[in-house]
Image (cartoon, rainbow over all chains, first blue to last red; front, side, top):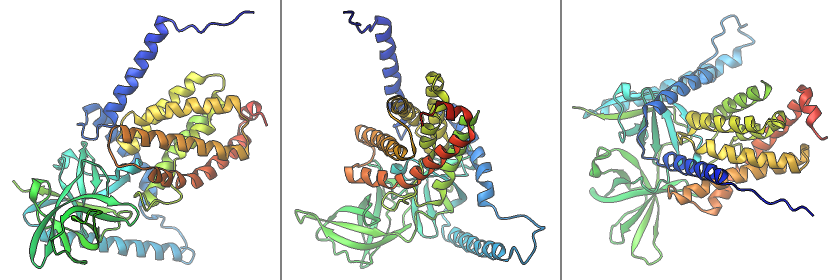
Length: 266
Length: 168
């Protein structure tokens, strides 16, 4: 009886090797989150954002039909007014914020897209290199710090939110206890309680619930004094040597539309 | 032309819905969309005789998906290729009907999320656990199963070609 032998020729082996190597190289390039963006990637990214802008336009802009009967469109008009009022309020808050941050120039931006790789918690905004945006700039809203710029393209940028659980993403913060600064590192996000985490706070630090957490300015990544949140929960570690603080932010991270990027004045 | 239109509409819908539902892990919507992957599954019958073209479309859509929505260049290109091989296997060896589609969507989403989580662990990017992965998968099922059923129903009715190759 004829038994078919599997034929893996040298040529096939070479092709398999090449394909595997290509896949590995692609994965290494792809998953290097700190990689610099190439000109080709920037070009295609900008094109994709323009397409996204066009696609999203009908959903983000308001009804511009003028010949609709007033009675029939009452509910639509009411909704539009409510949305506009909400938008004006949000923009006012951003403008108020602009007045308080005098030592930094501020670039306001609109959120274009949410990133679909949910694990990384990133957003795309409509300002990029052409607007003077640079990597690692702090991003804030009227509710305080929300993240930093992680990637910059010509006309858009990517914001990495502070809720990101990225192992390399740490923010130096200061906990205001009785008027004194206690420095710590904000290094994670508790997904069960939806609170930010500060680990390794000394057991002797007299932190209480509702104490305010702001950026410390150490590490030169974020300017000092930006509001982060308040202490919501305090837990001792299993050896009772240090405390873990859980921080509640004012910002609803699922509902961000406008942000401000802090640019250091020259 | 029909499969290309389906996959492009799915890609656009995917992005649109992501912007309207909660997207932070721990607070995800149960309607988390992965519609491009579902459409990749649904369009396979159009490429029964031309698998290479199907693989090519999967890779291109993966790269476009990365450019549009993830910034992880090539990752989804590779994942979509693996999924397309899996889809071909499912269509070749099992029956496809309204009921089985539910199971296939669950399998595909589990493989996609599982591979992504595996790579995140290998490259040590984000702390990952089985419970987080399960949470992500469970929140991605409902909308995608509904979408798969709608696509199956629609394609079955609009395309004679699809009807010919369908076993049912």
